[in-house]
Image 1 (cartoon, each protein chain N blue to C red):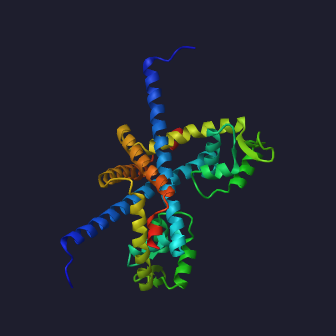
Image 2: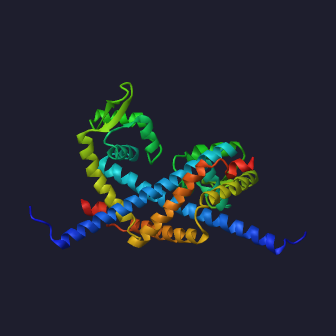
Length: 173
Length: 173
């Protein structure tokens, strides 16, 4: 068997190292996110008897006082696993949200927080924010800024990549 | 209404700033993780007709050639939403895993990858690793190291915190 030349060996090693570094990084990121998400999910249930998708849906509406259509809501949800229509029905029964006809197209309905929904969410959001601050308490303010910047750079890359028709998966074919 | 003194104002502002910084950071981390997970999930389905929990289960077994019990498997899974017993049954039917009696306690069964399972996983894992490297391609090698270190520090904090009986949630009561 012919030994690989130095240069080809270097390229392969660098590729493998880079792949391993990225995979290790992804698994570490996934495990941090999962730990936080699991903890938030269980605290929301214990403290407020609310599921994470329900809380998430109310959070999206809080950011859009003018209301959101069902399609917009599903796009904006941060967590998966919730049935948007089912959650909206429940929240409507509890008078936390209401469906309103669109001002431009009366056949289209949007969802808004009621005053009760707004007040209820605000109370939960303050406690939720304190939990998150506690969970990120292992990092200094400067480290949090660095982490935020790195994640923002990553997010840009992930968003840009989607616009490009060429990706590893199509090149492979 | 009495104006707040300078010092109380500072403490409150700092607390609010810290809370907002952590929340922004968490939402950015969650959105990166969700984007990557969604993309991986859809590529695994398109390329290999395999679900993420199935791939994850095989990955755990790959790291433990001696086999894992069902309880160990559920603890080690990185993603949620999979029924471990159901997935194992399916993989067993496809001859990718097999159940073996524990060497110490014959009533207990462990799960192992078969040779076919091992070869199948290895092929998928190499492609999966290249996808991840591509998705993290927006960061330099040095930035990936920094990100890994920050996440490791976070993970330590999250793990330690669980051991402590005092947390915001218990103090609140």
